[in-house]
Image (cartoon, rainbow, N blue to C red; front, top):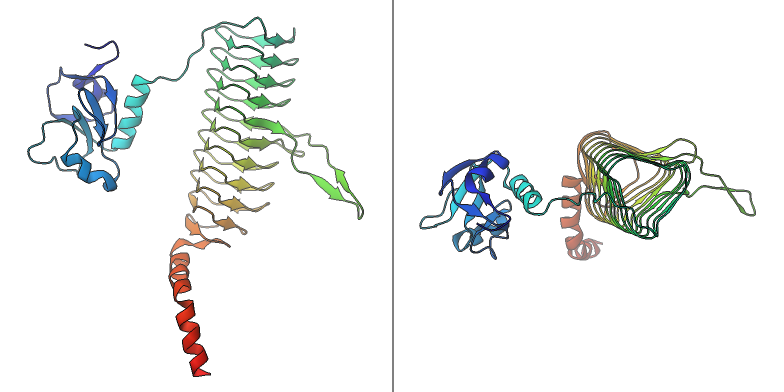
Length: 338
């Protein structure tokens, strides 16, 4: 058996599924797509777009939903479960676990004498940590990271190389931040005097609660007076802008290049498509879904999907989009009537 493998019975237990076909003692040694899986690899079907690949896959094991039918003549083992995509995620974690701390501190790291470091913390080359920082157990800090004075980093958090955490920022447990991201930079705050912009000192902090993950090259600004908050379980993609005093609700998901202007409050479980934007000082109810490239310029008071600019209910936007293609013909008819 390969060094990293798992039996089908163990897979079923891991993904909370039922092995309906296959040898319980048989095993897999990796995960691949339906089209490319072969040998001892597992795969999954979660998108109907790839259903045809189920007929030809060479995988040893396929994760299917409880309603999926097994193709006649197929030879692969089958585990059925409520959500095959979740099963895929759990299997990927098994074969590719998150980075864990080595407990080593590189001699090139510059660490202020007042920094409090718990057990088993990894600090890589050329890290710079300012005064009165508190680092909890099992944290990993990648090469070239800069951590400002008074920051707190919670247990088992991972900072990938070249992350900047500005002064006073607070990170909860199991926070993951990808390379190039800046947490706690000054918010875009200025007062117009009539002849010039007067900078408003940004004196709030940034709080990232437990299990927040932030992609590469994202910026989260510190609050002007109160704090900017990313609440527990929220997931942010690459290249996102979070302005000062924004409050992102629990378990919300923000896709790449989305942007949020100052003092906007986002509810729990919200979703934002790529390049969507939200104006400042707005409130979005729990369960709001904002489509790609949509622009929200008013409060969203009911859960559901909005699209377009200005953002409107998705069904309304679909009807308007369909009409747009017909406008030249409609205009010609109108001119003939005149």
